[in-house]
Amino acid sequence: MITWEGASSPINYPAIQTSKYALYRRRSTAPNSLSIWTHNLRGIQWQNRFIPNGCTAQPSPALKVAAGHRMFEIYDVAAAHDSMIVGGQDPDVGLVGHLTGGGHSPISGTYGLAADNVLELEVATPSGDIKTVNQCINSDLFFAIRGGGGSTIGVILSATLKTHPIPSMSWSHFDIIQNSPTREPFWQAMAYYHSQLPHLVKSGLMGYYNISSISPFDHSTPLILGAGVWILNTSLSDFNAIVNPVLDHIQANYPVNITRSARYELSFYDWWKVYSPPGAVATESQLGSRLMDEKALSLPLNTIVSNLAAAYPDLVLIFNLVSGPGMWDAKPAGGMGSMTPAWRKTMVEIIVPVIWPAHNATARAHQTDLLTHKYMEALRQWAPDTGTYLNEADVNEPDLPGAYWGKENYATLVEIKRKWDPEGVFWCGPCVLGEEWNVQGDGRLCRV
Image (cartoon, rainbow, N blue to C red; front, side, top):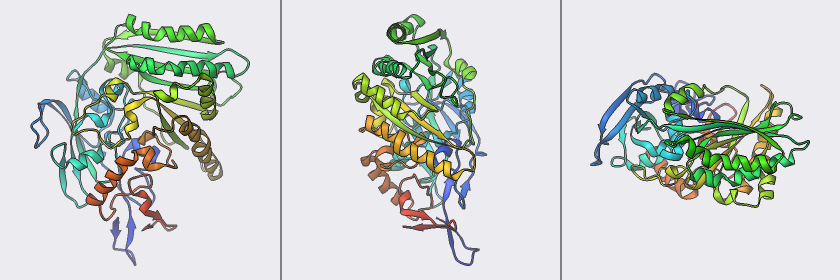
């Protein structure tokens, strides 16, 4: 903890590194804390032949990015060199919070998670030393930071990231709209669609889709699945041959209406600039997520119907198709990071959001209870052997170490945390060893 000696008795406060992407997770904001504002750490350097310090690896193109940058700034510099990095979909996502949680991406099904593409870091440790961190130097920190979560073990000053040539893409927008008096036939169509995801994802399909009422706050309106999906470096004819049979089957066998369009784009970056506006912030909401594997999506269709309906919060279900062969078979420098191993068998991430009126503590308690014990419990029962995405996880997850990191990774993270931060300078509740401290009524942190 940081100790303020000016008080009548020493008071302990947590130190946290601020990052937009950690706001959902209570990692970058806390009352009575010392917030380390890294937004003004600026600078992006293109390197044609980067070799991590102390290593004998083959040189490769890379970007060295200071901690204060957001995705749109990094993407723009990379594009000037006909390259991309594995980063967030939202242009305002911050670098550090994204990669420390693992970091899924609109291209991660092909190129792996953001954490898989980190080559080197500069880190200020709790002792005040600045360390070079990579697969050859301070390799334990390299493991911990790539997926272990922010506000845990030090302040990241910069990250050097692997780059990739800008891919082309074929993509489609489609809507599947309920066309029946009751919701049951629509959920049956959704069950079939999800049963086909293993085939689609293995074929390279990535993207995002939601299920909601056409008017999300009017539950009498029909349900709709709205999707934007793509496959990189694939012709439009090959793309349509993969996607259209699934949509054709749904249209022919279920009472739904489907609208669709598809096109080819020479540059994924140019497409991203048009179709990726900043996301909303500062809403009264909480998220939970679950990673769904092939086993979960191969259950009988009636079981999938029940599971989808049980997890639906009468607002929206969010689905991220951000996995694929490139993630499953990733061979990152320094080995796998500390994110949950469940990523390596994930087909789709399902996110459940809940909302409540501003400044309404009763409604907040009710909605967060529903999130943890109803909607997320339905997903945990559906996919009991997986986990959650750290940056979009329920802060009240009952099996926090197992779901966030996996039990084996968590045990290693605890050892590294005790080695590098024995006094607990960095703390947050849903962090490694967060359970060892308790926030008192007056804002002090005390060891449990």
